[in-house]
Length: 306
Image (tube, rainbow, N blue to C red; front, side):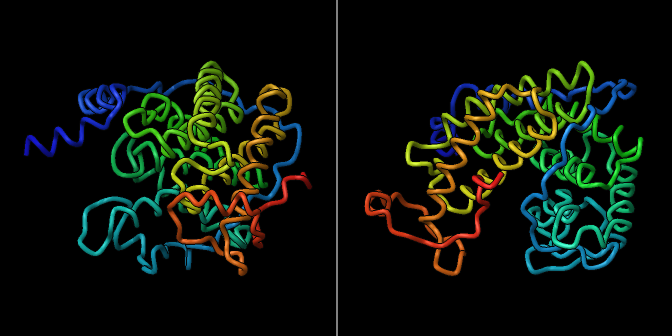
């Protein structure tokens, strides 16, 4: 047992060890009555990458080839038939921006209201930092695409951002940390108050550092997995998208760096997909592919058209 712990801890950074202990021993508090305004929109939010719908009916979810009904399973609770990953997907709210999302607007309003009523602050899978990060982004995207958030929705969103700011996943790092930072930037641009300034500043700092850490010289993500690479690339495209909705808030230098990195990542992805546009199941470095510049087809966004 001691040997297992030793060989696990030996590969962790000191920061990771510290924050694992810190998060275990502490519980953040948030200001439930904080005041805020929404930042004024300057430009339209471009339609983001759209995934397949995961909502079959108002309360019927479909994830990982398995469908479940909200009234039967709720938002939390352990069950042998429901995996934690399935629950994670339930709390992401990806369907808000999936194909045909406008046809499910009333379902989405119902689910957001239900989530707020059934998920107390800081309790359950839905308040883990990673699920909170993805949900914050999806709710804001949904609003920016013409589905105006009510005051109640916006208040919940602001509380979620407060919570995330105090639960950044320094103990995990990698794609989790980048997702946290992305959500803080989204919330920092969306809201206008003292909290939002802190979120934006922290999110931008992490993104700057993680771009240098997680994107290699050939444009590939340091995980060397086309799947993780694609997720990271989508995050960058979303950041560029929302930066243009609120121009001149983020420095042009930083946005231009995002664009430069995105182009490099698109080139890498073009090389790592099959002729049908699907990504390769690949997790090794093949420098020879890039040296030979082997062509491949992909449906990735053409950034040059933006």
